[in-house]
Image (cartoon, rainbow, N blue to C red; front, side, top):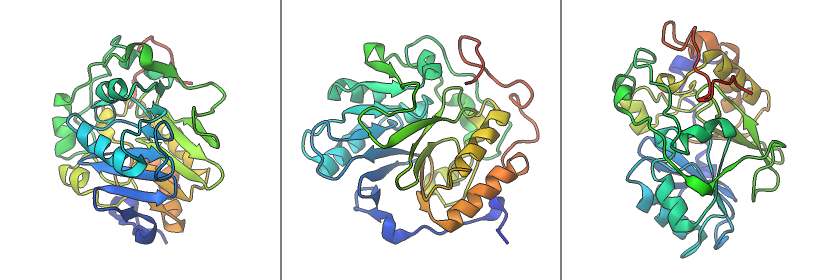
Length: 295
């Protein structure tokens, strides 16, 4: 019988999660991720792929530019720039050095259109809800940046057909709830999933959990989640894919049957395991900056 998620600690296949010694974990020949204190960025592309031969997913927290560029050069070669930067969403801990990286690399950025107001200087994200989730990170969430950045002409929309630029075989999936235009990235061939913050693998509301990234299947970071019904539906849609490998926005990568069992339990019992009992967005979910509903 599965262990309740609130107490589950799921082992990682360490042979498939090789730390190069610089914080970069290679979990497939062309998938690696870098741990940046409380958040992850992902590198998609074969080692040694060279200039424009790879793609970056998300862009860390402020102050991590040098860590990202060093890791990119170590993996793909000196001066190797990405073909593009993809965003799961635009919260501060996923776009912390995005403007600087996009300019230095002269790289286009792709995000869902519902995230664009937060990436063009148009609108700030809805206020966080410090009353949900418990823990120091939740308590501190009113201090986290939520003002927009402005990518200008570098910002592009993901294609409506689900294709992902420069990544044949991958497709993006709408997974709203944590933010209005949140997306995840999926590859059918090997059932690899980059879930962003649709679900994560550590208790992000806790400062200890955020820093230690103790492995635990978990719902989205509660303090920034603006629609709990949509979030539940997104987790269920991802669980239905039966992923073999998941790389999340927070926490360690996981793979295999134990991971899937925990993900299915989270999907099935989302309302009791992840949904808070009270909170600002329980009965009044936020909508996109232009007032539209979700997809």
